[in-house]
Image 1 (cartoon, rainbow, N blue to C red):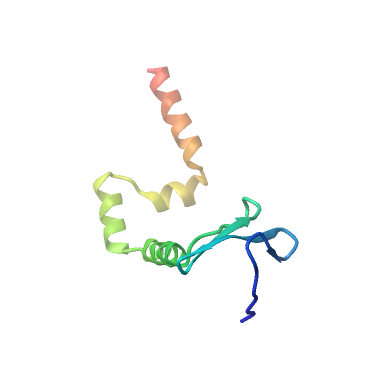
Image 2 (image 1 turned 90 degrees about the vertical axis):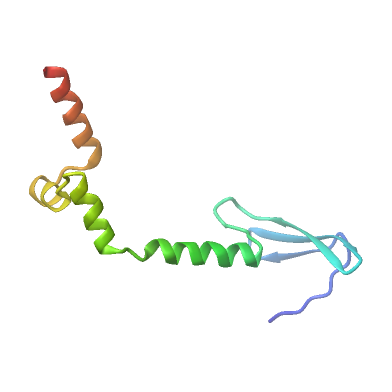
Length: 102
């Protein structure tokens, strides 16, 4: 870990595109300003940890629930993808077109 001492108004840089400025220090609380491109996410650690936890939970697919959801809607996902290689927008367009023809 790199440990730096900075005064109010002084900056550190991370790479070529991130600047951290010490804005204030009051009663043991340091306020930092962070300038970074929009492509670089900047979060407090507790927010970052919650995002990681949520993403892990979302990636755990309960296959039984997934199958039940598909079968309750009379959708055969495997056949429609493998048989015709049709993407969802195409399926929607074909359904709309067939409704117009009626």
